[in-house]
Length: 290
Length: 293
Figure (cartoon, rainbow over the protein chains, first blue to last red):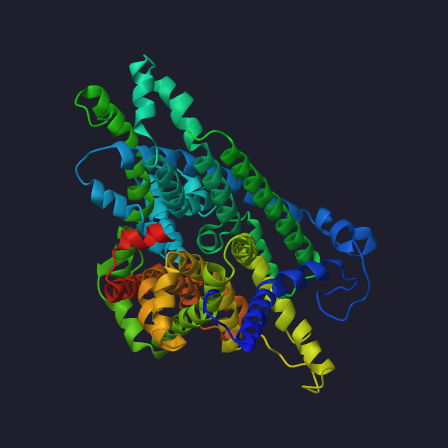
């Protein structure tokens, strides 16, 4: 069972086979997606018809619309980026503010508030979506009936998508940033204050640099989660579809390998993001600890 | 002791400034929308733009066999998916935490987490290409002379199950590995020296120690599976019969918000109930579990 105990030969073989099988199970779908992005055939299916870059660079004139000529896909990708940037910025701000509230603040009802902040993680995304949709349209109707105001941003569309994703991603940012603030050494702050630093200076020169890894980590996570969100987005989306919703629609119809091309592009992009973060955190460890 | 603990208008102001965004977030996006959903679910349209308080929406759910069937089916399949995920993830977590420690262990762990950096849509696309009638696995089965013609592997319950287990793996693996890592090897060695076999070590030492990780992983996987929409609808097609799809149909397709809201509450109730039962079984608190995952 553990290395210090004797294990029979077949136990070792069985373990190795299981690990190999598990890794195949994990990676087979991704490999298949990547490989068929280059298949010279109109459907992402075997047999292999030879290598082509048509599904990336092809255009209408060649009869195959590749990723870089598919304006619908490109604009949905841009939509996803804009939404994700908004969600990331909002989540980082509220995460920072909540971290100080939970770690430093002393007020009545703090316990309840901190449990309530975890609630968005246990509410299914679909329900977050429909509840925000229902509430927003209630306000919009109220504004229309009472003041004759047409509050367009409360109708299904990108502002609601941002709010819907933010409603639960904020929890994740809060947890990540407060976990780091909890381990902060108070004496550093006291020393700076004793030496005459203002609170603003302490925040800027000591606390913010200390929280930087957590801020970056939660920002990367928020961006990826927002980009990948489907459940909440589906309920709140208007006419501009983000990438996941656009892909879902096309997958139901049986699409061309251009979807494989987008997916491969996403895989490479998230791998680059992951590697940058790993390198950054490795660099952060080498720097003197605060 | 610290800035906000001190008395004075300054600290009160800064406390207020920190409280405002938190309250705005929780009230405007969580509490009030759910209150609105509750109100919607408890009313019935009696005339155009006229509503009355009623339990009609919930009554429809219990009297219409289709809704009831889909609800129970979703719950059962989620339980099964959670169980299968646990069974499949446990040996790998054991290898990562115990057998391949050091660099090899952490490398294997990172490798196992890589697929989850990619969105669920992409992963599901992969399964569709693998399993559909013209896909990779049916072609392989023909090539190996196991079947004569390509068989449709999509749109079965087993397909949905494969997709759900696959997409949940990360959320089981992470808490399992962290709870197994803290298990002291000498306990296992001692039990072994006293003549315990593998099964009794697992039952009396490993599982009790890993219980917090097992609970945390199972709760999260169950919730995510129950609320999943993408995987059942794409891999199950018309046969998916998943409850979130019913909510979507009522809300977005039929525009019957009252019925959709009632369905939403039923799903939320089921999810919350299962979380409570899981926590009670393991004797744990909600906050601890969430922090663990």
